[in-house]
Length: 195
Image 1 (cartoon, rainbow, N blue to C red):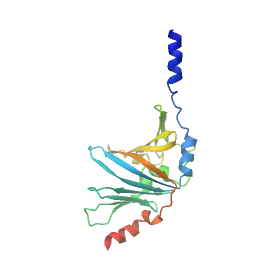
Image 2 (image 1 turned 45 degrees about the vertical axis):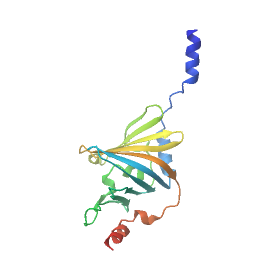
Image 3 (image 1 turned 90 degrees about the vertical axis):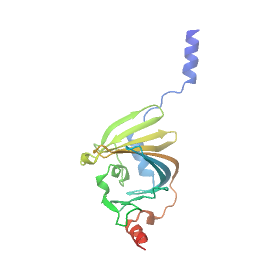
Image 4 (image 1 turned 135 degrees about the vertical axis):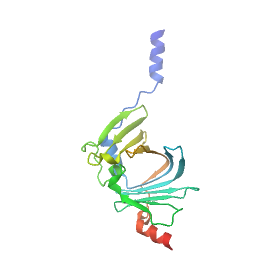
């Protein structure tokens, strides 16, 4: 009787999923042209914000925050620009290469070839990959969380090596839709806000 129960449990219990390969994840990013998703951002201080994220590969991403935040982050032309609606000053700008996010916005992602993978594991339905640019370790790391059926980026955590972690959880993912390049034009956004 014990053997029958064990056999039945094995039949109804789903097998633990294998982790996605680095090649599969690289291919996922390389095939992506555009993506749009809702996001919830959680910060170390316990604060949360929500909004809409837009990606246009390679090298471009935009985070539009919902009220009451109303901040805007644009990545384009190798630069990151943070627009603060409370300040009349120009946006805070710095090179994209100074953030771990640059690793997945490259024109060709090849995680297996580059010496950037700090961790690669599965916790069942999710694959978790931790990346750090070996040439710029001082800028921190990014941890990516994927589901595999369908394969989709669901979450990431950025640690900037100064004790700050930012977690982004994604939902309502739409991929490969037409997206205007003006969304990622920092100069155009600055001119729009100046008028």
